[in-house]
Image (cartoon, rainbow, N blue to C red; front, side, top):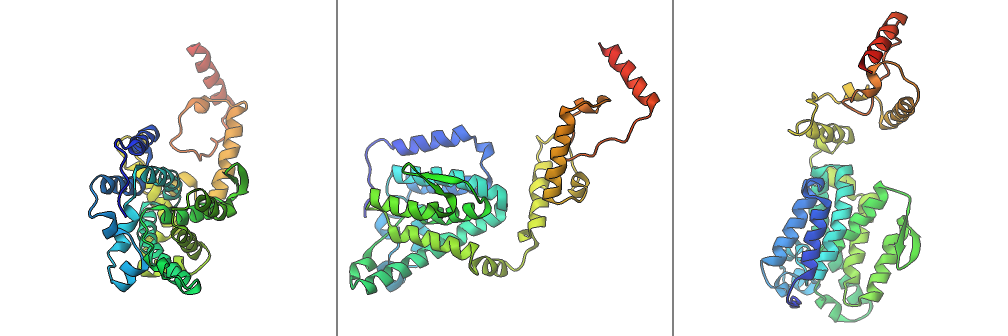
Length: 314
């Protein structure tokens, strides 16, 4: 397996253009770091592709386990890199904002290795079932297996909606399966087993025991608790120098101890309140957070004084 070079790396140029169009400040750190690592190793590969691709023969029989780490972050050519990284950009932004950077980075690291193992199991099974030892020699590189797993996670955490696969509207829940077949039919050189391994690992996380095993392996750190992750997510922005409000670490002072559903309901009511008739100067004030409590009822004297002040400004 040799890298396919065609002079100017148009795919790489388009990828960089896409990244700057989104804006570096809008890409979460783990997504940006993973993307940067793949681009760097495309420009400066650690080894030739034949030395990093993963197969049953090289990974299992030759005991070259480092390929489990190297194969996902190397790509065959610039278009291979482009399509994978644009997909990572979209999925990574949504999932990292949902899960938090630490958990998302943990998922990327575990999935990258585990998908390589599942890929070898699938190729070994195909070689036995079809009595064709050539499946053990199939060598794969690229991040697409991880992306199929992230697609399963994205559909799990953002349910509903439809995807358009080759002009066919499909429920997002089943889109990964149709995409698996469509890619294999349109590009026979792609690794069907590698993509299938990604889907299976994603299902192992969302429906199977993998999520619990990962949490147990992580030592039960409180960061992987949803409420702790939510507080850390918002406190990260409160510490940013460009954030206009120096908020303390207690997030409950802005939510009033409300759940996410209660916060959404209150925000909706407040939005309707803003569009209606409101007295006082509160309607033009910028609030430090989206969830606020209406002011207490003003006395007649206070209302009269505010009306006089308003006419004075005119």
